[in-house]
Amino acid sequence: MPKELIRLSNCSMAFDEDIVLDNINLYFNDKEFLTLLGPSGCGKTTTLRIIGGFLKPTSGDVFFDGVRINDVPPHKRMVNTIFQKYALFTHLNVFENIAFGLRLQRMNGKKLDMREISSRVMEMLEVVSLKGFEGRDVSTLSGGQQQRVAIARALVNRPKVLLLDEPLGALDMRLRKDMQNELKNIQQATGITFVYVTHDQEEALAMSDTVVVMESGIIQQIGTPEDIYNEPKNAFVADFIGESNIVDGIMLSDGVVEMFGRKLKCLDGGFEPSEPVDVVIRPEDIDIVDPDKGMLSGTVASITFRGVIYDIIVDFNGFKWLIQTTDLSPIGARIGVKIDPDGIHIMKKSPFSGIYGDYSSFSAEYDEIGDAEHELHMQDDESPR
Ligand code: ATP
Image (cartoon, rainbow, N blue to C red; front, side, top):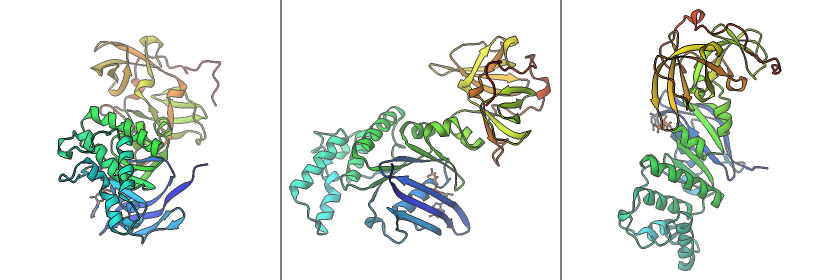
């Protein structure tokens, strides 16, 4: 049973009149890798600073292990922070950079002999794969190696929680990916709770146990990477986490949605009869078939080669969808599309409806769409849930 470590309860933050966090409720479990994900300015860093004790919420409470810590200063919380600009001490070598916090504790009266400092530093060098680098001048290290020294410097103090604010932001793509794996390994090896801030959805999905999606100071969704990707709660989350085609639909009954004038089978239910909904279809869930066999048919408007797959924009009488496929169809080709019921995800309407999820300007000419069959494309053996 996971143990709760930190809880933010009804936390709001305002700077002058500006509300930048609006009634946040959130908890982190011990040994969890949790990521705060959202666009620039959504309040991720502010949330992190509240956890670290660098900011006091305007209202609401912060609990650590069940104890209210609103008034506990940063250095008395069992929390350490790594910022994007990790600022190593350039006049100290790798060993001394990592040992710095321990030496400080010793100066402040903590019982730490030189042997223990040395063994803890060497242990951390091993954790961050920098064994043998202890005598090196930090200015001679690569960006990734410097980042690892910063991680070791933070971990050597054995915090219960490590706060990481876009720590890989300064690294190039390749190194970033390597470091993502390494950070995940370090987190699992040390069992320290990581609270990670990023605006990069791929990074969040790759590393986290739990992702918290934020927008305009409000939590939009909390879940595992799979939940967030497969079951986005609203059009903002669907659009922010990967590519999505989002169209208007009407939920006719459990398992049947009407979209573009067609009735399509899906797996969702629990909506009011004829409730207007947002329908999300991920580009990789769309199969290209012959035009006369498709649920809809349209014309290939553009193709971009992405390495393994093609991004194909298909024009359904002015409404453009993104399809990701390994099958190449030339520009101008007439194609049909088929979507399995589990590729059609239904969301309630929200303030984000109509803002996201089409790959051109909207067209209202739904009635004229394609020459595809108007029939309900449901196999008899698949009854709606
Ligand atoms: P980014 O990814 O760009 O760092 P973020 O999601 O981390 O963004 P925050 O840094 O938490 O966002 O900022 C949220 C909002 O609060 C922004 O509009 C920011 O300008 C504002 N803000 C943050 N700190 C202060 C401050 N000390 N005074 C006034 N406004 C602030």
